[in-house]
Image (cartoon, rainbow, N blue to C red; front, side, top):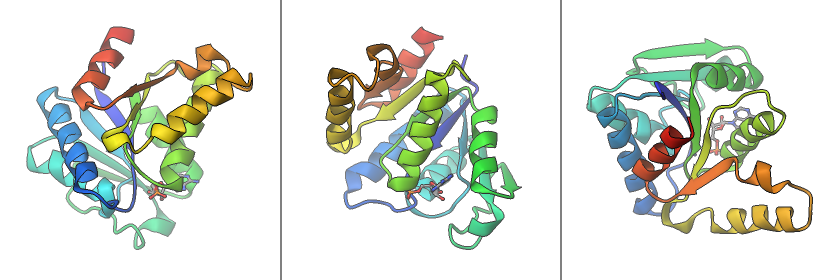
Length: 181
Ligand code: AMP
């Protein structure tokens, strides 16, 4: 049962409206299913859009932001809860602890760092929570091909590759999470 979902996503909105539309669709699915959002706490980019879309529909949001980013990422003042932590590492640890599952939306280096850290923790058996990639508008196609290349070159086990569920629709990804759990 997923009560809170951690979403990793860009501090930029990205180039295409499809990305922001995808984030809004995810927000709709979360609110419909009564799932709370855990995210980086900023009011910029896809992050801010996603949190706004959840909040305006009466959903539940927890932002986790390090003091150093309070200004840069404009800590969102309209969340259900804002947790201010001392470092990036504390942020990732608290987000992981608060959530029952993890999704990456389109994003940049920070998004990839967060996604791959949580996947490597799964690989090491440090948690058994589902992890997924929302491949909106084929943004992650090349990353997905590269992951398959890593398996065929025997640097990643097929079992570990399969821990990352990939879908283009938020509803489908959440359904797959439920059928896993
Ligand atoms: P980006 O995908 O680069 O736009 O960043 C998305 C989010 O990831 C932002 O909130 C960044 O502050 C965050 N981020 C970037 N690097 C790290 C890191 N090493 N640990 C935790 N969060 C990070």
